[in-house]
Length: 199
Image 1: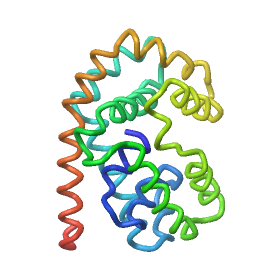
Image 2 (image 1 turned 30 degrees about the horizontal axis):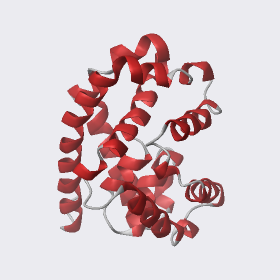
Image 3 (image 1 turned 135 degrees about the vertical axis):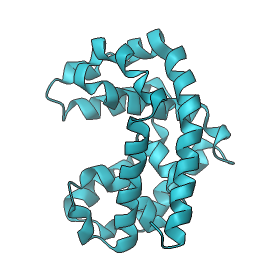
């Protein structure tokens, strides 16, 4: 999953949301320097990634992506699953993608000051660029993959995402619609345990 899924699954608390969105920018235990509620968001993000990456519906898609994307297959799949989430957003959220995106960016903007400067700059750029609203259309997906390619050792492996979506779209959509309700339910379970102080 990518930013859109993690934002949707993070719940309402801005600090916890911040940890979920910024999680990939912290390595190892670096998140422990953050306020506890933000740090718990990082752990929530990581646990959902672990659940997703080992799920049969995720794993069944990877062989179709390996020939074109190689070691970046899982990265491409994460982004394309956010694209599919944007297309089916009404199934999982009572209001539309655009209001959700603007609301989430507004909540994040109130708490990014809690992050170290370099991480904060990345999050501020995300908010300014409306990243959460980029996944639903081709231009936005191209922007996402160009951004990823700038950090990749083999950037050309991230360029043919449109061909992958056209060739394997049915497999990806079927797999996503099986996976995401289970990820959503698991996230609710984690949030419940956290509210009870058991996680």
